[in-house]
Image (cartoon, rainbow over all chains, first blue to last red):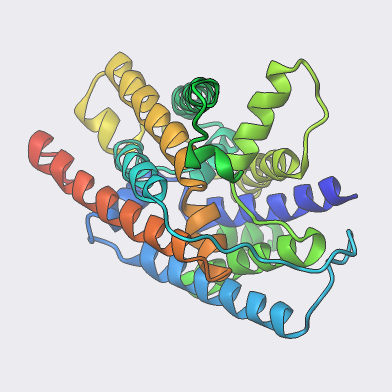
Length: 149
Length: 162
């Protein structure tokens, strides 16, 4: 049930991403070069709406509708990995003029260039997993393994 | 006639004050329904792990990603727009094989970087900030600054304005 619900929300998310033009590398690049500020208005509107909704759920001390557990929006303290990882991610985003959501949307829209990006994402994930395994074997547990994403 | 109206509505870019809140509501929905943090990299991770295990029992992050792909497909059908075979500044600047290489490299950076940081624009940028996570705020400011700077650098190096 939770998986079906997530899939449904995913459909809305993917449809909206595509409809907003976010899956177009031109739209994203225009935003990052400050030639068209749609990207930022869109992003802030999304953050503001999400923030308001989460606050409401917190105040209501709500329980998740499907799993009945108490809602616990996770917050983390900043660690070096948040900066280092995000820097690498931002570089990749600039080159591909797309981040993971838009890349997945491109796949749905039949933009076959996305297959190259996705191949890279899979390699990147595998590299991360390999690094996590080797540092775990060495006896130190890297912060990047500490919480899942 | 009605079909044309539908197509035209979705073929043109959604107003930011409609599309933005829609995404925001998706974040709230995932939290409200299953106490989850909406994100995309987690979905890729889920699919990669399940395929590696030869198991096809995806978690909710994986099914969310599949839904995302389906939703974009649905939009493509409804908006019935012309298909461009290009890919933005990359295909305007480089030949096909080079474009593929750049995208592959970009993908590696995206996959490794976002997984290390615990999220991408959706996971940290939208959900993390909505939850009030300071880590997410730091992550967001970092990837935004780097993405903007890197975009300008590519513009200066290759003269690719857009």
